[in-house]
Image (cartoon, rainbow, N blue to C red; front, side, top):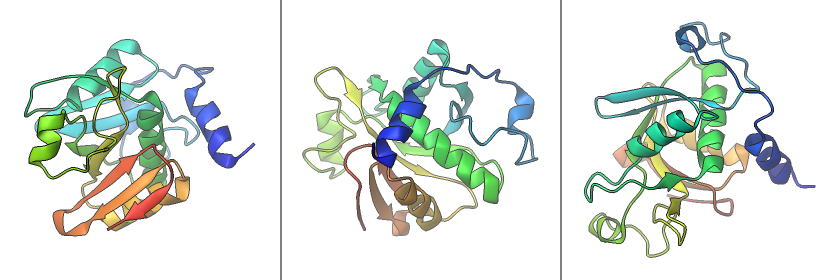
Length: 179
């Protein structure tokens, strides 16, 4: 079994449902168990949410934050993507401290994708089931290079470096990188 398959299995299992509380994201970076990748602190503009991804309502709230704001459309984000980003956030927290994942772009409808110059087969686009598999993010005080390198080391998917724009593309397609 490949490391990627093991990680996918672990991320998709909901054996332990953690209790989410405000102290989980305290200044002490050891306040949240590193092995728990269902907690995600996400921010978009003025909206900020601390989510337990195992809670359906929290998952829906995160999907809303990742909506296509130009088209005002909401779809489902891949749970694998969200749990993988939670793992990335936990690894950053271990070294630097807790920082919210700041969303630059999540879901893109075809017209939005064309308007921003996205590729034709972008993982930001919803598939036939309406699910999307990519997000562009940044973390305050953490270089996009650092965020991208950690994502690459996780081997969860594609990494696009956009250092001039201060964000990194993360997706759960085949591992690859550009930029």
